[in-house]
Amino acid sequence: MTHDTESQRRALRREIRAQRRALSPREHHHLSHALCDRIARSAAFRNSQHIALYLPNDGEPDLSPLIQRIWAMGKHCYLPVLSPLFHNKLWFTYYEPDTRLEANRFGIPEPAHGRLRPTFSLDLLLMPLVAFDGAGNRLGMGGGYYDRSLAYLAHRRAWRKPRLIGTAYELQRREALPHQPWDVPLDGIATEAGLEIFGQ
Image (cartoon, rainbow, N blue to C red):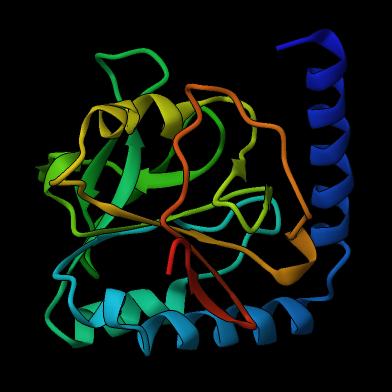
């Protein structure tokens, strides 16, 4: 990656994060609920039993209504936790209503203890992002945690789990994003406007 490309990515992150944080609490609430409703109505959600998602940070969509739906439907919910053994990778831990949360080193709540689920055994992974495009490219916060944790998917052809759905607001959409060989592409994107599965 050239210095100019990385500078462009940093500038784009600052721009979109500022736009997202500028939304009012009411706008966040309305858009998040619409996004969750779109996901809950999808076949990808209905057909999944083991679903990983995240708790919001830095103006990200709030998926709490979807977490409640997962629990109510008897599905299994998981949250990412920073791996204590592998640098800059994520594990996924079972999340129940009584799970105790603690802030990680970034100040993001994660389960203090819990049963781990191998990433490849999840059915659906709802991923946060800063920007996305219509080709399935995702711009994250820059730490590479999801890309490193999901790198094994690049070597899979027939059996690819979990299905990767990015979650965002439409204001985060861009016409095209630069990407690198190690970037893990999304299978789809969910926004308040709908759920789009790429390649269909």
